[in-house]
Image (cartoon, rainbow, N blue to C red; front, side, top):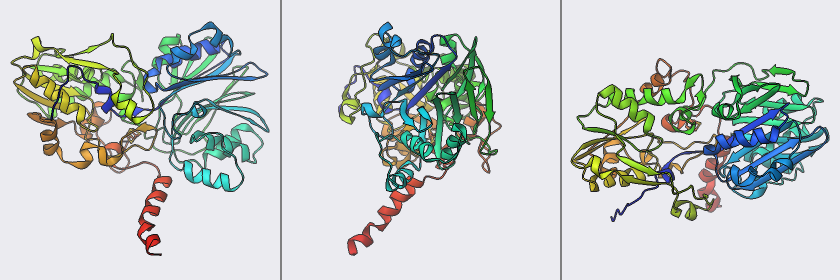
Length: 488
Ligand code: SF4
């Protein structure tokens, strides 16, 4: 195999968080604040961005493909979205593809008034619910799973908006962190297991919500707390905040991959600094998988905090043996598969002067398909590294995610196809090790994984999904029926 790699794109072989949401109410410049907040969440979705605002009379929407800055940096764009309340969304293409009609927030005129919703997550019974709604006469405008929520709210017979929303969400399975706008205010809510993140903040008289706390740092808001799993937080235009817990109490199962890779390291997730958690994962990895080496080298940027932790724990010096160019610019990621994989996005290059003749421990956050890991190992060898040991700051990713994260189908995940030793051979490293699942839990503040009732969603490592996967089960059922259909 010809592995020419003057530059590498290490981002094409990652799991990707698919959405980020931000909302502001009782803010004099709600749209400008929302645009700024979305900009801080840009890493959660780079294919499209949208903002909807409300000025007390009308709702206004603006949505476009591309980055937040491409759509919302002009004063004309901000002025076109007036009002004291606004909500926004950044996305990769998730359920529903990448068309403009699927760009959120989605908006509908209901009998009770306007209804706008921005959703982070994925509804795992969306197709089943949609089929049922269509049979009952619903006409869908988009192919997004989020529109199912709008139709369920529209057809609910409860009198108040909060009751209608609760009525709708009782039917929904999967992961959702929602920011909803109605003529009476904003509702932020999180699924009963809290799989996707959502935090609440304060900025003077304004209340703000965001997928990650880093957005509050950027807009100058103060983090108040997480929206609790299963909670609806309602804020009206007088600043009254009401909290409902209509789904009973469950042990929360936030996505542990937020700690590993998705969240920005300067965010606080599930009460812990993401940066500190990543460093602790690296320390744990050094305890579990030590190796004689001269340098600890991160795969930038996501491997950096874990590599610092590994170096601190092991005493092996941390060095930047791979340099990422920050001057290439992030090419707009086309939503078609071919363009996505061929586009020049991020550039990495070996720091030859440093790695030549050295025994290197490479630290990355995860291995997905393994193709990038293989190329990076080869790049280190071509730069003269004597030995290349690969250490991974998460357990083997052997299962797909159905909760709003873009994962390749299971057959393309390296860890689903082979054990660790064949994986080592595949990426051509001298040794390969992953942090254990218990080690990961310990690093993020738990005392180890409780197998009877795990404290996080970790399904992409363990295959133990915390919710029903109705649409998947129906598909598998259908596939199972196929031979019989053919016989018939
Ligand atoms: S399956 Fe993995 S990526 Fe998806 S929510 Fe669970 S832990 Fe996160």
